[in-house]
Image 1: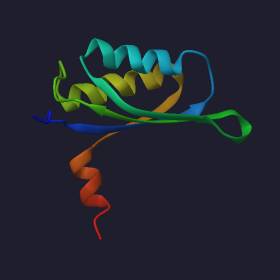
Image 2: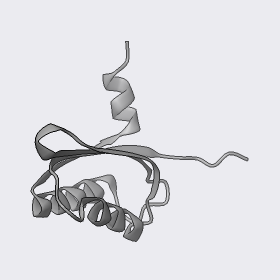
Image 3: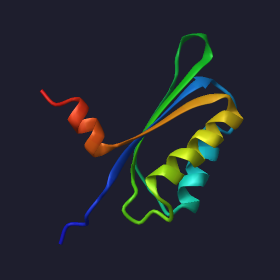
Image 4: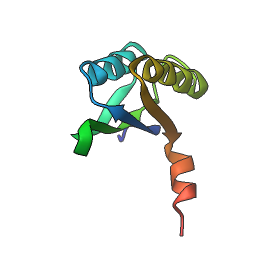
Length: 95
């Protein structure tokens, strides 16, 4: 039997610094959110870019609360954090 997943994309962009991955992943762990895929890179001029696909099926909070919590962490790190549900992503990129 296949597990049902509810996927959300998280994008984090800003100046590289210590603790970015730890802060985001710890928050997700505490909200019972599983990281399905993660990609991070340091680009030219020290810009950090991370994209994550997470499963919020068993999340301890709503999408609005998740988005607010991650943006608050991003503000504390001087990073831009965007949260987008898979359904919205698919609708925006439909041909």
